[in-house]
Amino acid sequence: MSSAPAMDPRQVPVIQVDTHLPPVPAVRLQPDALRQRFLVPPVWQPELVAEKQFMDRAPMHAAVLIPIVMHTAPTVLLTQRTAHMSTHAGQIAFPGGKLDEEDVDAAAAARREAYEEVGLAPDGLEVLGQLPLYTTGSAFLVTPVVALVQPGFKVLPNAQEVSDVFEVPLSFLMDPAHHQHHQLLWQGVERHWLSMPYHDGLRERYIWGATAGMLRNFYRFLSA
Image 1 (cartoon, helix red, strand yellow):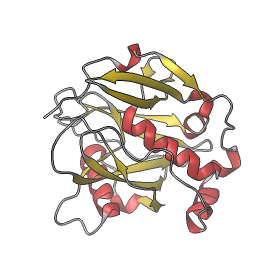
Image 2: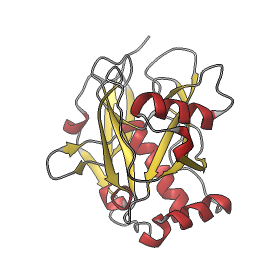
Image 3: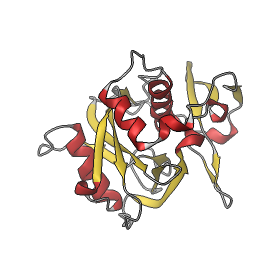
Image 4: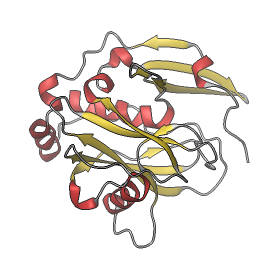
């Protein structure tokens, strides 16, 4: 079994920043516009669907929740995984995990995981729809489930899985001027990924890898 590249992604040079692409207009980021976009989706293609594999194992189905908090300026709720996790330790992620036998579908799994990880009550989520399957280098077949969340909820992070919970403006994530491309040669394989580093005034939230890839697809969906 091969392993993930042993490197700090922050130290890998940026080869491109997409300042040439327009941001998603603010009006398209509002709840009613998001509802309409999923109700009548455009013709579009996801840009990123599979990472180079670094784990040789049977694929496992998983689901993540992309929770959009309906502030006046909407945000996306994200987590930071604890350092002892078996995969993607310490990375910024969406709430989510493997599908269990009792999960009737990906949306059910995403709801359950969001409740278990950060305390988001399933009945407080308005699921809008799903984005295309995303295959991680660790062999997870991930279905991203997009949902609206009313502000004012209480976050209850699971200390075994989540070291931090925070929000990032959706407008920041949907502006390609903040999308950085990286490239690395590892074990003879050229690997590419995106990062979207966000400074919240106190610290840098380094969003990269699968999380950034799924957000990039969300950008393509909203800008189509």
